[in-house]
Length: 412
Image 1 (cartoon, helix red, strand yellow):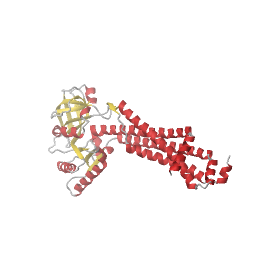
Image 2 (cartoon, one colour; image 1 turned 30 degrees about the vertical axis):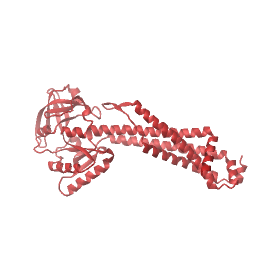
Image 3 (spheres, rainbow, N blue to C red; image 1 turned 90 degrees about the horizontal axis):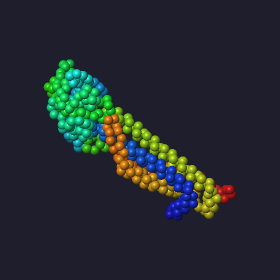
Image 4 (spheres, rainbow, N blue to C red; image 1 turned 180 degrees about the horizontal axis):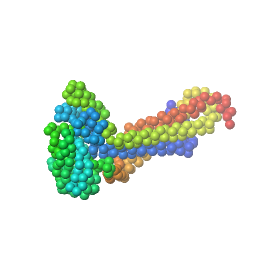
């Protein structure tokens, strides 16, 4: 085997320019795919973090049918106190759950005494909400992250459009489940930048103010947002919570519930899927480049060395040995291109981190792109490239191994 490797390397060095160009094409493909997947993965992860850590949580629990009607924020599909107690018990029993926040969501009218507009409100326990959504506090562009009773945090769209300032007293009007219209005076203590663009109309108030406004005797909840200790365990934890709640429903302890991950709650999931498709397309492009490049080089090598192949065949060299020799040449080209590509790609990724490019997403500004060198991902890409390099060598190598010595020696 060592002899075959030496022969393969010698043959590659005989045609240095061609071998270098082929290895360079493979390296360029590896660099493009590794850097693109690292950058796109960092971008996707950053956007998912913005969605989950500033607005949604990693997963949410609702009464069955609530999400299908969520645009109307129905007060008739709420989790009762008994339901909430069972859900909380279930979440506390899951080792993968870090924190959760109960929310009371409803539609309301917002007035500064001269103008009135629609507003979606989230009644929350502030400490639980900040713990479950660690980036929520950073969205407060004016005011403080504290949310006391009698105060309200409003979206900047309303604050700017209606000229509302910190400390202003405003009126919030809402209709409860029985159809009764109620109003409350609240003090603006914060202005919230929207995470998804300029169309957001979500405000926050203390959950006890929300219950008082809706005249609730018992603390019914619209949804429970959940944060996990390890985001990579999302599907496993969601499945475990879903299964446990289904058992409680079957036992008659709670009404039917639904467990939704962020993927089913955010339209950005479709963007993430599109980015993954683009990454797959880039990988397929790399496969095509490697396959065509290696096959072209090996075919040319076979045609230029017909007499040489005939000579070694006439000397008694077995066809499988000739086949192995050419396969090792293609393998060596692939290894050389991969080593160069991985080294340059890793340096490029580290360079991107040093530069720290920033971009804006909706109203979020100054988001820093920080791709990471994923050794496992690089290993997979390298394995695919190496496999394709060998596949591209098989046909020319098979052709060389099947040559008749007499005909090969007469060639040219």
